[in-house]
Amino acid sequence: MTLAIILIVAAAIGLIFIIRITVSQKLQIAPSDLATQIQPIDIEAFRNLVDPAEDEYLRRRLLPAQFRTVQRERLRAMAAYIHTAGQNAAVLVRLGQNALGTTDGNTAQAAHQLVENAVLLRRNCAFALLRIYIALAWPNGRPAAALIVHGYERLNGSAMLLGRLQNPAAPLRISAGL
Amino acid sequence: MLQAHSLLWNYLWVAPNILLLVLALLIWKRGLARQLPAFLAFAIASAVGDLAVFIADIAPSVSAVNFWRVDWAALLIESLLKFVVIGEVFSRVLKPYPSVGRFGRVLISGSGTVLVFVAALAAAYARTGNTARLISGFHILEQTVFIVELGLVISVFMFASYFRLSWDRLAFGVFLGFGFSACGYLAAWAIVSNADPSIQGRTLLDFLEMGIYHFCVLIWCYYLLVPQKSSAPKRAPALPEHNLELWNRELERLLQQ
Image (cartoon, rainbow over all chains, first blue to last red; front, side):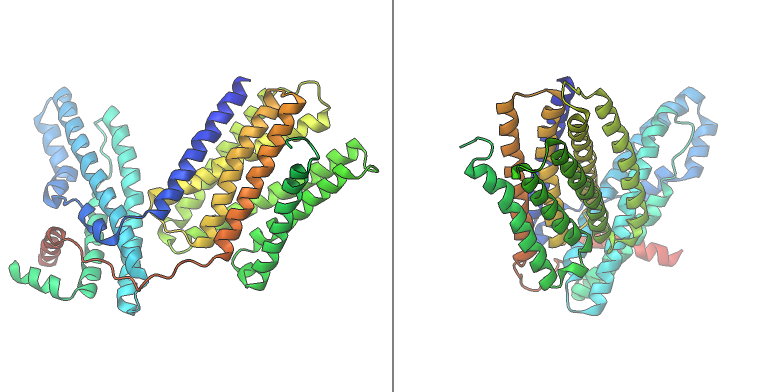
C-alpha cells in the first residue's frame, strides 16, 4: 500500500508539472517584456573573481583557514554572477527564437547563432554552478568559471550582431555615446 | 452505468481506438508520416492491439488464459513503440540545437537507466496477491512501463524547459498525450498492483484508464490535425540599451586587446 501511495503522489506531481508546462507554453511572455528581464552584469568584477592570479595572490597572503573563508565568499559571489548569466542566456534564447522567423537571411542567421551561444552558455552555467557548490565544501580547488566569462562575451557578440541587424540605428547611437 | 460491459464501457474501449486509427489515416494522408513515423506505427499498433483485446474480451470462444496472452502481446508491442516515439520526439526537439544535442541524449539515456532501476525496485516490492502469475505479471509490467514512461516524459520536459528549447506543435502534442496518459495510468496501475482493489474498485479504475486514454487521443487529434494559428511576422524587440552599452564597451575592450 505504501508503494501505491508513493507512486500516486509521484503521478500527481508529474501531472501538476505537465499542466504547468502546458500553461506556460500557452502563456508565453510577450517578446517586448522579455528584454526587460535581462539583468546587467559587471563583467570586470566577474573577470576578477574568476582570475586564477587573484586566487594565487590570496592564497599566498592569507592563512589557510582565512583563505578558505574568503574563498567561500568569492565562490558564493561567483555563483550569483553565473546564475545571472544563465538567466540572461535563457532570455536571449527566447529573443533569438523570436527573431528566427524573420524573412531577412542575415538576421535569421544571427538569431540562430545567438540561440546556439545562449544554449551553450546555459549548459556551461549549469556545470559551473555544480562545480562551485562542490568547491564550497572544499574551497582549495577552483572551479573553471573562466569559461563562463568567455561564453558570456561570445553571447554578447551574438546579441550585439542581432541587435544591429534588427535595429541598425541603435548601435550607432550607442557607439557615438562612447 | 459504471458497470463492466455497459454501453459507456464499450464506447470508452472502442471509440478512442477507432479515432486513433482515423488519426493515423489522416497523418498518412497529410504527409505527416515522414515527420513522425514512429508515432504513426504506435497509433496503428496501439489501436489494433486494444481492439484485439476487446474482441478477446467479448468473444466467448476465447479462454481467460488466451485473453491475457493477447493482452500481454498488445502491451509489449505498445510499450516498445512508446519508447521509440519518445526517442523520436526528443530527437525532433533537439534537432535545431546541435550544441546541446549530445549532452541531452546522454542525460536522457542516463535518466532512462535510473528509471529502469527504480521501476525494477518498485516491481520487486509490488504485492502479487492471490492472482495468477500471468495476471500479476501483467499488472507489474504495466506499472513498470508507466514509471519509466512518466520519468522520461518529465525528464525531457525539464530539459527543454531549462534550456528554453522551443517545441513544435506536433512534438508537444505527442508528448503531452504521453504525459497525461502516463500520470493517470501509473496511479491506476499502482493501485491495481499494490492495493488489491475490490471488483467494483477495479471496474472504476478501468473507467478512469479508458477515460484518460480517450482524452489523450483527443489531445493528439487537436495537436496533429488543427493547424497552429498563424501570427503576424515576428519582429523581436530591440535589446535593452543598458546591456547594449555594456556589451559595446566589452567589445571595444576586446578589440583593443
